[in-house]
Image (cartoon, rainbow, N blue to C red):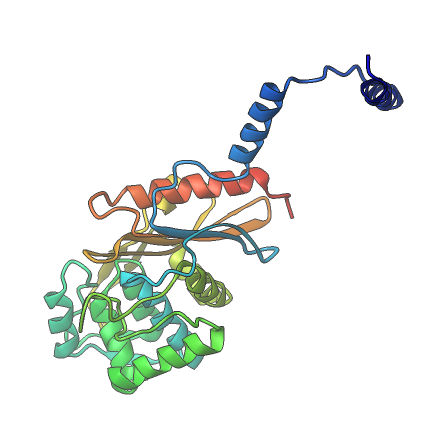
Length: 300
């Protein structure tokens, strides 16, 4: 045995003896296999999305990203910013009368509407539920025109809020993310949406609304009854799911901004353009990200 090789062997044996272990020196091929396995475990598998990010909201640590700074249309995830502007303005018990214009707008973009009926009087919070659960564009229109006042002024407030949050690669052209004036007029990035989600989830009313699977509003002298189901199917299929918002247009593909809480840890993530053809794929991608994330995070 060469002196250098002998020294390495003795040193290795001494280290093993000190640790009280019996060592089996792996071959180079075995070591490579182990490294590959460790590398695979360090990232989630089979996440179908053009862009995505997962964040440990409890610690503030970014856990995994894909194309996080690429600008993309975000469809109805836009309504999270609409909600945030309204929540920051306050007055959740403010009463708002449903206009014919709001109903017409909702019908024009059915099925993304809450079925609001002209003449009904609802509170701001109730309209937030109608916007965030069934993705009601009629509710978004009514909130924007009320809190602007006028939707043009409201959209300016949305962009101002984005700048305050540091969402430097985001622009809002409307209040609901639908493809007008064009498919790419409203856009953001996976990372910017993490900033938006974190800000929105600090509001207790927002958290309470987006974690609901359904919401029933009984008839009163001021309004007819409403029953809204969340478009976020992750709430029904993933333990600990806590929101947040779905999105879809032909240009954006199927998207999901999501959150879940387990063992005192909250994870927030997003998948953008999961596919253009399968609405379920975004939920599968989110579940895989969350399961991977909870598997490696240390309990709070």
